[in-house]
Image 1 (cartoon, rainbow, N blue to C red):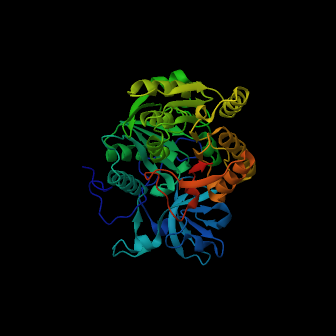
Image 2: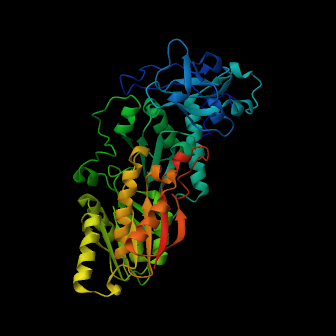
Length: 469
């Protein structure tokens, strides 16, 4: 059994920072790393006056570049180096991992009050810290938390193991797909400590198959060069043929699925697990339409729940191929789901036109629509444009939906979640569609997608269930 982040010969009260075993992954990352360091020997990032209040007890886990007054230390710290964060009066308040090129200048690892509570008799300034040991401890803690959530279980073996700031490892996302681990790296420190992260994941979980995926766009913002390595990015996933060779069988709430570690994101959207199960309970006796269905998670649950008919629509041919494979893996008492390659908006317009032309009755219109488009607002600057797009899509969905139908509509844009603009947008869409809506449920990601309450930016998913009269 792995011993809670302690290595042979390591003192139990030793704190966290050593950089043993780091390797270069970019010209901007160090080839050799120093071993354990004392707090008093670390470079210091001194904040502007008044900025330290955001980093107090239970404070924000990120130091933004605009909050920094100066960096003190020779040689100057480089990406992934540990630094002390000090307030405007030069009093230490935390330590973290530095990046001179990132808007996230320091990712906080521990506050000074945490070190003071460690029970160590040595003065703080003389204490040693070890990044590798802390990474191991955080990974173990994340794994134990998922075990307490019954993940994995006999019915579910796909879940989020590490959720960035929610598990105090900012910039690191880790999903488990059955017997495989998929890592999404978005921070320079994660690239620098890749070996340590992979080793910690393997030791904590007992899983050895790890796919490491660099998010090139975010790593460029971190000051790292692009790589020509085998790992694809979210923006440019591997071709369907390559992805198919890497497919892995998974199970979510008893639904059999195929996931692709080289597909979208980390291969599967585990954040909607609870909402997919809800759809299963709502679908009996209904005509269900799953828009932007990806690999068919909502549609499969609807069909298993007893829907009269279920159709999934997505513009990605490779995603629809996955959805059709998933349909073949499950047993259907009623009708199996159908899947179609088409743009969701075009499909809704087509169905509305056909309905008007045939003067068809409401019984042939969907009684339950799931609308789960991709991220439309990657940042605050794109928020207004994204809201207009969401409004158009939801207006179409509400117009198409049968009277007294249900609409589950989603946004995975953090900018939308932080702006609290999703519900007002839905009201505008209802007005445009000439429908009356009632909010039945507002939810976010599943419980394994942990959140740090001091970092609300981590809440990105909004899932709203509406009754549409």
